[in-house]
Length: 341
Image (spheres, rainbow, N blue to C red):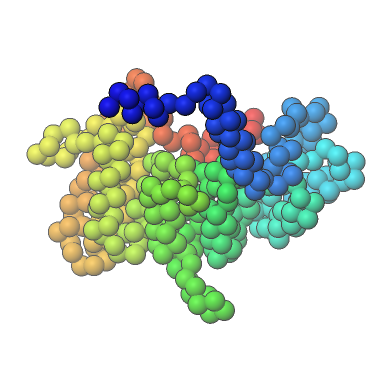
């Protein structure tokens, strides 16, 4: 056995070519890994800090956007004096303004121009465009853009938590619709469940994303399930949500009050219970509806007790992060308030 072991070892001279070959393999692997990157993406890796001109343009565009002065923001963005200044960050600001002002067509022009110039379009810019589609009721375009992002080779170009929640909100605003031209169904619980599975199913390869649903994600998906009268599915998702966020009844025998690691998650729980009560009422299952009405009141009572005792809704157990400031509606509002202040 020992002879065979020593026999399998080659001399140091014979090892050298093998080491060289392994290094060459590593180089080829790195080369293949980066071969899909466009010139804009390669340039992005070595991007220098923003200039004073770029920061000034950002401030001006943010001010115009906050005041919904869309045409002035568009004119400033396209001004020839900014040809060497504007980047994807400025594009994102203007596209978001286009969406909020109901003129997402102008946002599409900005994205198209960047594509023609082979300029980088980051996930924030695409999310702003998706948000504009959702606000405008263009759920098919929103869904197709989300799928396009899912197919991105680079993980950083795939949907993030904000993209995910924006898509779910769009599903809330638009009922499931059949498009006669393609025979596809988009919107409502049909799209939301497809998006949910794509984000929460662990897969290897191009369809994997780095998304951890937050409280807002659960709220949107549960409400959508209840709107579709999928009560059992909604109940299962509520159980998943409460387990993940550490929410439990204070008394197991009588759910008259609840304990939560993050107090703000009780908002989501109350909305979820109320949506489920409504769904059961529409189905004529009054006893089930009453149970969830009672649960809703219990959660609201718990929230009221917390407020009266001086505990902020953003207070949580020490060492626990607040889940609400990442990608949900409260996260967006918090960001917009900070940017506009």
